[in-house]
Length: 273
Image 1 (cartoon, rainbow, N blue to C red):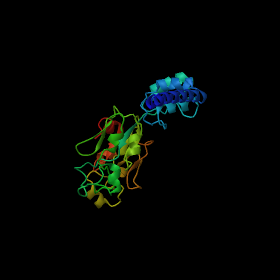
Image 2 (cartoon, rainbow, N blue to C red; image 1 turned 30 degrees about the horizontal axis):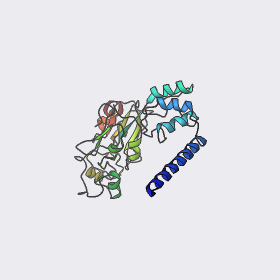
Image 3 (cartoon, one colour; image 1 turned 120 degrees about the vertical axis):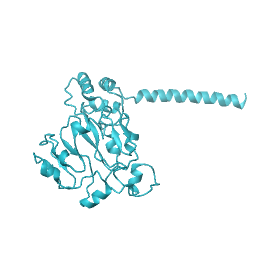
Image 4 (cartoon, one colour; image 1 turned 30 degrees about the vertical axis):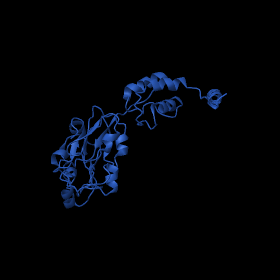
């Protein structure tokens, strides 16, 4: 008998033994599938975006079934998915607060001068390590790391090198907020009402702010002085609004010389920039 035939027979026998062994171990160590977890997974959107805090929809479904996770954490599916999960679990999922990502910067290439020609790694994280690309050290670096990680195509880069959010597509999954090295993308409740400053420049020196970005908060305090509800604080060199008091009157937006303030429900959700 030739060596080739003997080798073939031996290989076939070994494969048979391994197949039987693996089959045995698979049955012996198999984890019984939870029918409730399977039913929950079937009503989840399958985006596997991680917004719920779990690496995938199946993991989230298993956590709900075992009582380790709330049924209202899927921002992609929203209230409709939470309702379906409630039908499976037989318990109230609770309120689903839908959120969207808001860019707290308006410093596009026409408003913020560049330091010079940047030749480093073409990512926001790389640019931050290198010291940034713009004179404003708090602003958007403009390489679109947020665009690359968005699984819903909700963020695009404008020709002015500033991200633009499409709120008809944004699910509030928080992936872009985690990716932004400058922490400029803020998750905000979709039903939020009130004025907010779309700026993160905390430089306390007004003259330097004006030189680094023409559409930054100049720390003039006009928003504080003209707010009829006295709900704006400038102690941290960037305005902070108390939304429990804000009435969306728009006085701060009217008086702001650099137009940093926007009324969220009127100016942000309607048009990103």
